[in-house]
Length: 410
Image (cartoon, rainbow, N blue to C red; front, side, top):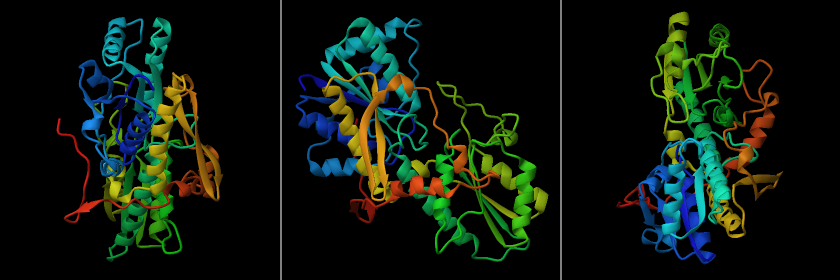
């Protein structure tokens, strides 16, 4: 590489997003980039010219390993929606002036659907203006809803954490006797895609029956039918554990969480902040059946639990970061790196690049055939898909009994 590389992180963080950052940095330096800049808080920070030289923070192999094990976005994140080019050309001109000032040859953006929208718009502007900077998307999202890629870095670690946590909730729920039984409802992230919620089925094994019911947002949710199923289960067992997606909706399109509270916050991309689904359903069951209930919202723990990350996930995150730099160095632009599964047993996966225009602003949902006919569980095909992605562990680097992370001082 003759010029410099700049990299940013956007959207919700994951336990693996910094492994991709490490992959970008290491590969860029190996390919001859003089400098690798990090934009603080994504494209929004770049517009404010808030950038750092990553070589000041990643000085040796230990720093690289610490970064790979550090959750959340090391560079800081944002949810900033670029306007359409015809709406505000000045924003783009400002961005490209900054890129020219920094002598940027390759622009790498690590993120999900909305981040790929940014790559699409910037690469389109570069084509129109003949600007030489190349723009590549590096996939990231625990939601696993990016099109054209088998799965996304970050998903495997979140799925591993969910499967582990749901299994522990099941163990805990059988500890005590309750009069009319106990119903525990675990709320899981994912918005409109049920990949994360389906991962609750990973709790099932020789030593655990797994959750009793799993509800994905891909299918309409019927509250009365839900209450009937829970009541039937309580005639057979004293404890019931249910996994629900934060984004389950009624047949009329309303989110279940909206039944218990109004949703006031909407981000720049029009996404409502979803929370309270488990709490509403727990109150509903307590009122209908009169049993003890618990609502458990895994919340940010799903994406920040680096102590429970998947080795496969961390390695693949590093791999796609490197592949993004390689693609830009070889002349690609307006593309996103994707993971292509070669086999399940033994598990093998490779990388390639796809047109970001076919990925941005799209959502990959769980196939209907991977959900049981009655819509209350996932099939064995779903479990076979996700199980290879949670394999292996990444031992944290522990100091005084607590994992050590790499941190920024600016």
